[in-house]
Amino acid sequence: MIYYEKGSSDTALSHDDLKKGLYEALDKLGERQKILAVPPDYTRLPSRAGELTEMTWKYYGEKLTDILPALGTHSPMTEQQISHMFGKTPQSLIRNHDWRNDVVTLGEVPAEYIREVSEGKVDFDWPAQVNRLLVEGGFDLILSIGQVVPHEVVGMANYNKNILVGTGGSEGINKSHYIGAVYGMERMMGRADTPVRRVFNYATEKFLKDLPIVYVQTVVGVNKLGEQQTYGLFVGDDFDVFNRAAKLSLEVNFVMVERPLKKVVVWLDPTEFKSTWLGNKSVYRTRMAIADAGELIVLAPALKEFGEDKTIDRLIRKYGYFGTPHTLKAVSEDPELRDNLGAAAHLIHGSSEGRFSITYCPGKGLENLTREEIESVGFQWGDIDETMQKYDISNLKEGFNTLPDGDEIYYISSPALGLWAYKDRFE
Image 1: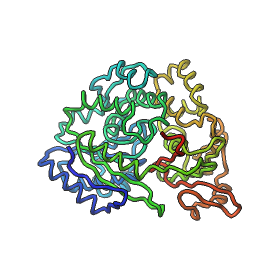
Image 2: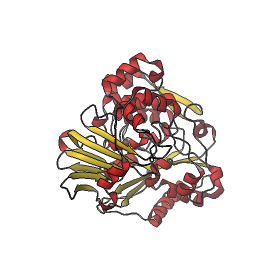
Image 3: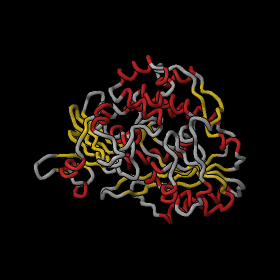
Image 4: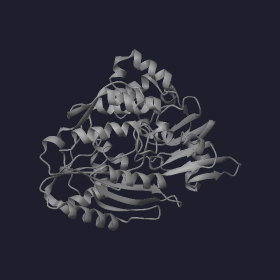
């Protein structure tokens, strides 16, 4: 059922618009006594989920007893990040999700179904895992808050992914990432109906039906002026509400470029991107637009690690981003990588498969990744000072730019908010 819906490619929702829409939906839900909010973490800051969470607290007051950021594999939020994202919401309500330990398995999607939807590429059961708080907390409302946007693992982010991955366990996260990677992320990005989504939908229908989950979903993009704009708000409790948001997201977050891009420059906001685990969105979201033998330049001033989890960071350092055959061979030979298939999937996602070059330009602080570290995982290294002098982001506009020396580049300031493709690579 849809409780609220507003959005179009011409819509620009303000803070007050979001509040009005959210409260209209919550009014329709009726009286509730104990509420859990599940927003994304700081890595999804542009989603407006922080504001919506604060609005939820103001609406319900003490009845909102817990806030569980859907960390997935990400690092716990700092006090500063919590304050910045969730405003005056009491920090005492925040609960940290431990994806390796603090989960329960509600059931398993059978291997036969996984084999069917993946076209035979994988053959294992998939556990539907969630943080135990969702099951044991005694809530009569769970608000899953987040943003629908093209995504490399599932096709379009949010809806039940926010629950089954954001609050999921290591096995479920690892296997779902791997399904998407071996099936082919270029076959899935920007699509609401994908093998991974079908697995999540199966689990939702079979194992989540007793949880009182309502989804609060935004659609946010970058407009023609290079400014972030909120195009839609959708609130409901079934696939239909997600599907409607996904259609709008594809309309406003997807850019079909007129020709393959020879040189792409991406800026990674230092408040959001500190690892290649997140920063490789610059690779995922542009790969279908970059020309063969093209060049991707990633400006990453806050880059200090590869994985946000120590085990994953170590595995990335060990195997690097050297393409699918290299990674699949490592999976077959290394039990630890087989136990961390999410890391294996990420290694596949982060490689250009030798089709174009990837140059990372980290900052020069003591915490930043070094040239040796960058090159050891298969990327090229660039001097950030020299590169930013050449590509002055303060003078660049979103999309095509011709520099004074005649060099043409394509500039992207927020890779997490879009998907770029050339028509021959998106069918």
